[in-house]
Image (cartoon, rainbow, N blue to C red; front, side, top):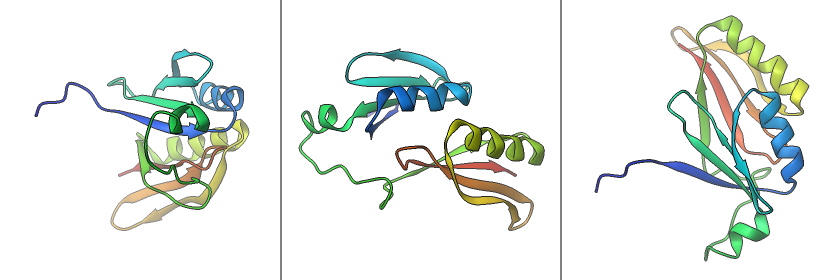
Length: 128
């Protein structure tokens, strides 16, 4: 198999809130309709779709976990410096995200933090 692209499909409760949050972080919109809002997340145009939970569960035959209480995945966003990590933390809080672990050094030369978006989806911001 040789997939041409990979993207994510996550569930949210409020498309307006999700759109506002990711727009505040500077991500480029990939469109929106009545069931989803979508963003390009990186230079290589990784797509994250955020579906209303009922819209996604109507089309898949599986249980969707509550991201506030369980995690299937933690996305990692790269940073160019420690200062950029710290700036991300400020912007995440200003946009309405929750800092799960404050920026800190760990391991040999690593620096980063963990945050949750308003629907509980987790992201590392990481400099090494």
